[in-house]
Length: 248
Image 1 (cartoon, helix red, strand yellow):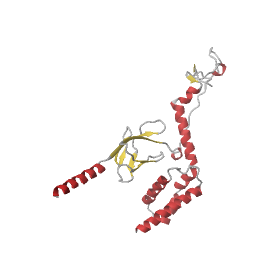
Image 2: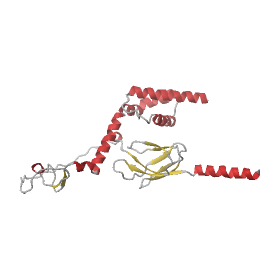
Image 3: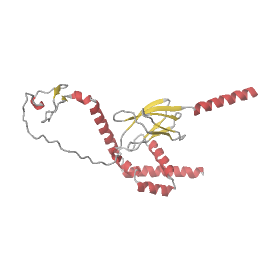
Image 4: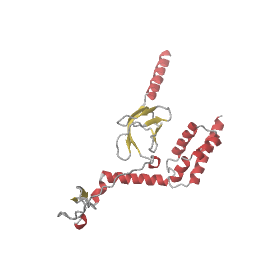
């Protein structure tokens, strides 16, 4: 009998060690230029384990399948992931243009002191037959004859810079479709009222907002008006408050 109990104890202990030793590693990249991002916190909201990425965007946190992983960074849109079976992941986060600090840019205007006219045999791009994929010496709208190349036609559509511009434009359009949700969720007065109404701390409310977002991840409040988002949030908080009273 003692042998069976000992074997059972060893089995349970090894299973627990395996669970606690599970880790998730990965790299965090910038969503636009795909470069590694350092000094980004990666936090497991279940066991509170966290990691700060290094210069290669690398992180390592204790996590098991089903854990919720939060990736916040100043001036970036926070990202939430659900840990799966993968032990190493690559994930990207995007700049939140609305929260970037304001800056003003001033510069001197360079003026050419003389107008040379057309002193060369080069023809302007508008005077040449154009065609898809053709590359010309010189730049369009270039009165100073600055050296350069112009790529004409649909090939330029597939250049990395153009893909990044389209990707960023799609991200801005997506954020615009969440405008009312973002206004409500980032309103200090609304959050203060909710904390008072439901007797919540800042930490309690942050956790509930994350849970609320996860419950609505299928639509992410795209195109929803303020009143609709507010109704969903109140119904969610009411249900959580009722559940908490039943537990007590």
